[in-house]
Image 1: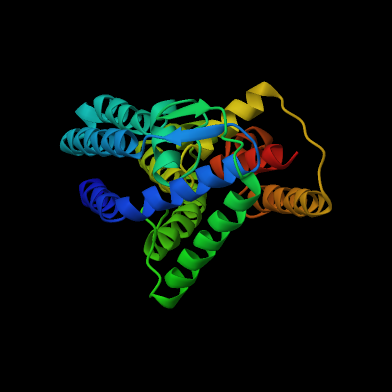
Image 2: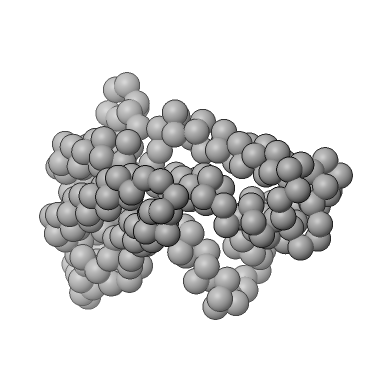
Length: 272
């Protein structure tokens, strides 16, 4: 499955290359219009890097799939980790952003130079008008799933995967398996890895960014909407904890180790 996704992503990237370059140029014009630093995006280099990295990811995934049986469990797990690491590097995260016409966060595939000050007031309306025209053309055509996101089928799979993990853990709990054993089990590890793979594809670099921000202890002032989201998520977390305890019979230690709960807590940390 990973191979077909990689080939499709590569094909979509090449097919949409001209449009991506146009969007990048419009974004640069807006930067210059505001008198800010201009970021020169190297879309070709980013595309080449991502294509090569995706191919490497697919190859490692294929190697992992070939390692069947209990005897290859450890090697298979290591291969899965190695494959996931390919898409978590700063270079890969920047490549995805640059292909989408966004400035790189880690300084790859882009150069910063002083913005041109000549006729900034005229440049901004022209760039805005061009962007609006392109947006109108896009709206007139049938919408297609962007290569950088996930399809409806994959989104449905992600939601199903979350529910399947909870259901499977309930079954394992009823068979007297501890929470620690569940989380280390081959089946749960495979399901969690697939869930994280879909999350990473939906939001490239999101998992790594969340971990980095959590370690950095960054704080920000919440807006009204942000505070509302925080309160809602806190309620959902408490409700989910109660569900794990009442319906699944989890101990406090097992609740703390639950991957879905940890994911919700990370989202809460991001909002805070």
